[in-house]
Image (cartoon, rainbow, N blue to C red):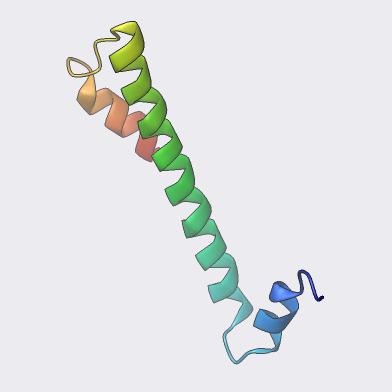
Length: 64
């Protein structure tokens, strides 16, 4: 059974390597933004953190 090798297959495709790297970067950023949102909502629900009052600054911090 073959495991891995997806990067080698992508590099052999007609897609420029810059696009592959950019796609991985965008995906990692989306995952990290979702993780931060989940953590803030958890802190709001469980610990009573007042995130609604500071929502603009939290959005700015998440997107930074």
